[in-house]
Length: 125
Image (cartoon, rainbow, N blue to C red; front, side, top):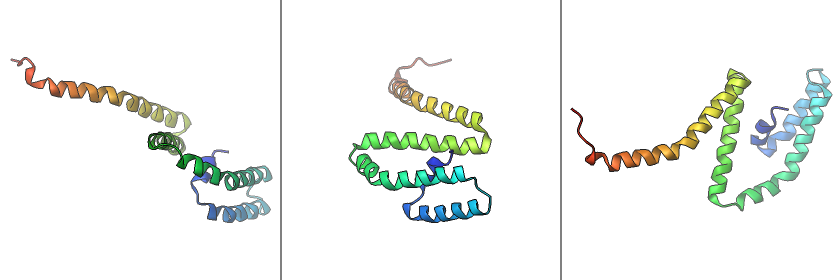
């Protein structure tokens, strides 16, 4: 199911409403029973595990939370651009973005050295 990440972003109060809409869609023949069963499984899983995951994430240090948030953001970008541009194009876009993020510290250090030694450069004629 590709909407697991999207469902994890929804507040817990809206999940029973979505469950009712899913049951109605199944009764009208718009949704397969297997898909509804997967949604119910996700609903139960999110309801049972959300307090534990919230305490686990809240107990981590700030830099680990920022790292998890970065990976979560990349996953959302991958999903959005995969939906808009296609799966392969979205994957390529996120891969290039991750590569640029890995290269950023080295470029910052290089820029700092170039700025620090700029007064000592040889003049070009």
